[in-house]
Length: 332
Image (cartoon, rainbow, N blue to C red; front, side, top):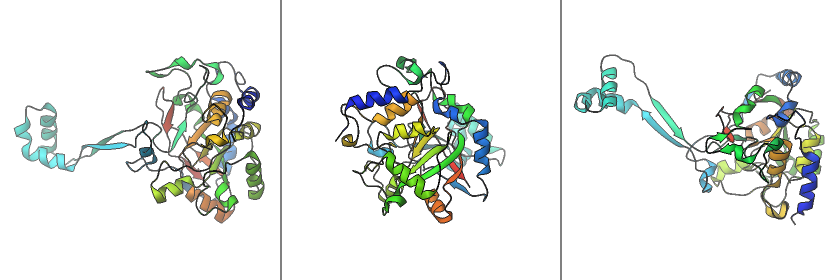
């Protein structure tokens, strides 16, 4: 049964970080990533393993299940067929200035090249939510006005504002799939609670320290790779995990599912949608990473018993964007 809005209001007041790092702050909990924290993360690299946590950006991605976002459209703008065609038929196309220039270029030297472009929502696959992504009651994180996000982009809290932080820190994998003994993924109907996170921390013999990035393995992405169903629901963090992240001074949280938090309204707050997004992004200033491919990392951590690693996950620096693609890597 969904919780009462009164509990959400109490949590918002308790967890709100507005002014904690100054009235002009646009980094939020990334401020927990200090120079010492980055150095600590580098010391976790002892084996030279590099594990990709990014999914493919392709026409087969998960966004095909949703109407307001589409999968990436990849288009070739120059390819080998163009070169051979322009060399052979270029003189007949002289009225086309581009074709004429390309024909002349290809005709008198051996150099060839291919070029392409991509059209996609910035949150089409593995990505970060910027702090400007979610708001309520006309306010963004730190009290910035919601109307500072316009058709020109986000004046405050755009994804490019995090550039100074990397984002790189200590990452800690919390493997919910292994803890529950699930076959592949955490089926819907069983949200991940703060108490369960504590159980996983104890079972894995890890500690969540200030500035860590918490990475939650639910198995959703592995399930998606097997079924191709981007709209299938799965378990995520219960909205009250926002307080758990706040108490541990997490710098950010990422998961392998589509929303990080549990999408079932019955496990949320009555009268609203995605309450953890609201608390984390708008009140706490804590970024969310979605659609991360955590299967290989989970397998490696289970094999060597090491669940901490250096995490390097800078978003694409799109000025004014409210989210951006990322190709994160874990280094052990």
